[in-house]
Length: 224
Ligand SMILES: *Cc1c(COP(=O)(O)O)cnc(C)c1O
Image 1 (cartoon, rainbow, N blue to C red):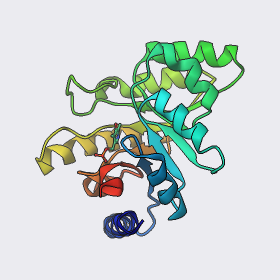
Image 2 (cartoon, rainbow, N blue to C red):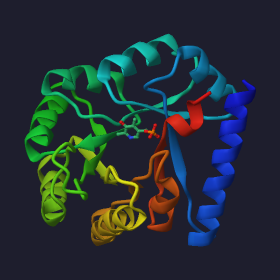
Image 3 (cartoon, helix red, strand yellow):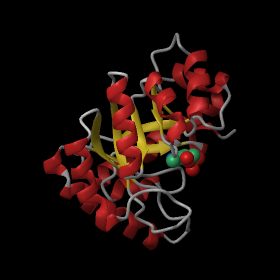
Image 4 (tube, rainbow, N blue to C red):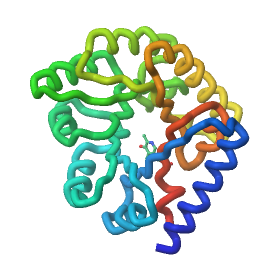
């Protein structure tokens, strides 16, 4: 418990410092990414006050959320979604799906959500680093695809965009990727985009400095 408390306290003060440097008026949310964590540690993090948790696989989201059904946790799905898992994800009613990464996936989700009379809050994932190991739409297509999904998929409630920073220790490269994503986000304000999900354990302060307002933090919170 003490280790997790210490991790959480440190993370909160690091976020706060970066937030104040960016803008006193900025509001930052963070998701505790529990994909490598035991149920017991999720419960401890909950007791310490954390309410939003994220998983990158539908099966893990299902198992963990159903084990912790007594706790009013906000569950986020942050990983690549396979089409054969769409119905399972919809049934879990996640707080937010961060990784809508193609028009094709959007159309399939739309059909299934309409069929089961439900809807899904989602972020469009943008591959701002152009790394071919990463999913997402290309930056230059992002706005058009966002508008197309908003218009044609009434059962998908787009709330903003998500990106994963480049796999690199180069601060400048990370910054340039996050700035590009922030520009796309700004161009979507008129479409109602309000969430910019970027920043992980290794790069969240850079993400905050570039205007990210939702962080996805795993190891920095759960490591012992
Ligand atoms: C695992 C994961 C994270 C958290 O990674 P850490 O580096 O442990 O903070 C964030 N986003 C996605 C999409 C992930 O898969």
